[in-house]
Amino acid sequence: YSYGVTARNTSGATGSSLYVNGQWRTPYTYLNGSSSVGNHYQSQSFGANGSVILHSGGVTFSPYTSDTWALIEARGAEGARVSTYPGIRIDNAGYAAVPYLNAYELNEVAIDPKDATNNVGFDSTSRKVAPYA
Image 1 (cartoon, one colour):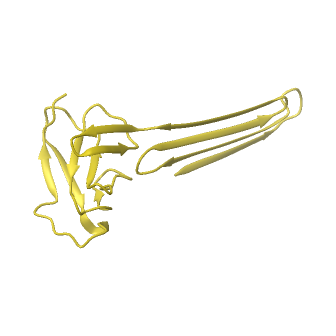
Image 2 (cartoon, rainbow, N blue to C red; image 1 turned 135 degrees about the vertical axis):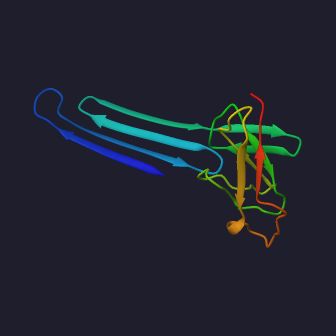
Image 3 (tube, rainbow, N blue to C red; image 1 turned 90 degrees about the vertical axis):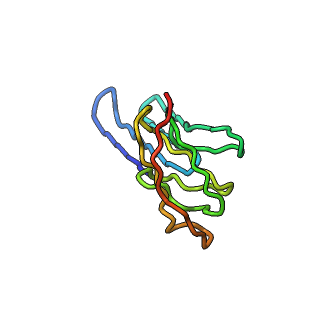
């Protein structure tokens, strides 16, 4: 998560103002919001973005948006982190979506089993994949 606050106090027509914003990346979406208030105005905005990936095993949500993905299937490894991608974990259905892969190149996709909810064993925790564009 991140946040910011800006306050301004000036004499004259502009007067004082206050601006507050925040962002939070959940395992499913990226949320953001802001609010500002000043002399004769106020403004609020809220948003959410991310991706919904439909596949034969169900639906997987991601806080990232990308055009090239890897879908990890690791049933029984719920909660395990996907290395190098903040906030991405294996979901309750046993899937995770890894964004920002380079098309037609070998990309390493790895799972860190440390935070898996079950005592699960892995044949391997890393694979190299070369997705299409």
